[in-house]
Amino acid sequence: MSERSASQGASLSEVQGILRLLAWVVVFVACVILIGLPLTLVLPPLVGLGAGGVVGLFAASIVRGTIYVLPEFQRAVQLRMGRYEETKGPGFFMAIPWPPFYQSVAQIIDMRIHSRPVKAAETLTADNVPVDCQAVIFYRVEDPKQASLEVKDFEEAVFRAANAALKDIIGSLSLSELLSEREKVASRLEEIVDESVVEFGVDITSVELTDVQVPPDLIEDISAQAQAERERDARVAEVERI
View 1 (cartoon, rainbow, N blue to C red):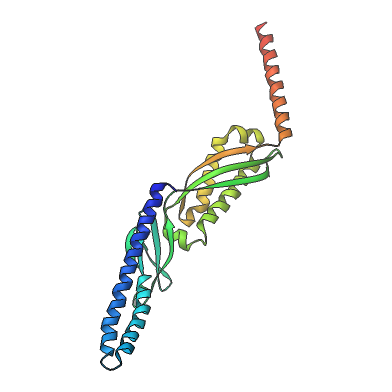
View 2 (tube, one colour; view 1 turned 120 degrees about the vertical axis):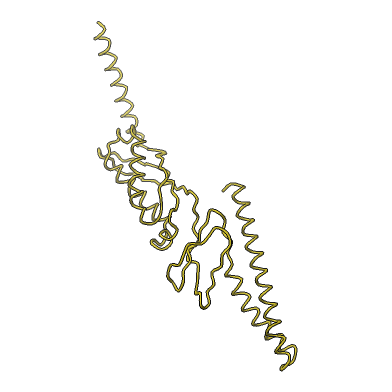
């Protein structure tokens, strides 16, 4: 996270904290005045004010938890009686749990682009060569409702889908195809994963194939084969010139 993003998140958190504190104070004082003072007319002053203070503590704690302030890059999925009501944010809103609202926040979703590394270890290619392949997948949430309610953990679901797709693609290609057509492999991986996670409200923005590791002994064989092919081509070219 950049210093600017961290500062923005901290400042918004401070705003939310201040608003919650103010709401707590206002509700507490109101309960003491509206409930405690009238009780002093029929009860001892300390008892009346104490009763108002107890009610104020309870009410203020509940009201304090209903206040939210979200930054531009976050959305909150709000429920009513356990059912989806609407998506809130950014900015100020309240989720009131008591009648007649019965509201709650199911999840707060980060709408920014996320990145996650994906690795397929010792996966066999179509020509039975074991390789370790690594990729980085970039994705963002397009529909907070789906990301929160259609899947338990959308980030883990994206990772699992990408990992399975990467292994399937490796298994369908030969080693030479995997090494020479990285862009096509990345494009195909992006297409497969995007189709898999669209129902979760997630969009795959890009995929980059970062590394393909081949067993060292096989690298020597490939190098020797390439050298032999170059020498053969050189001899053919020399014969053609004669």
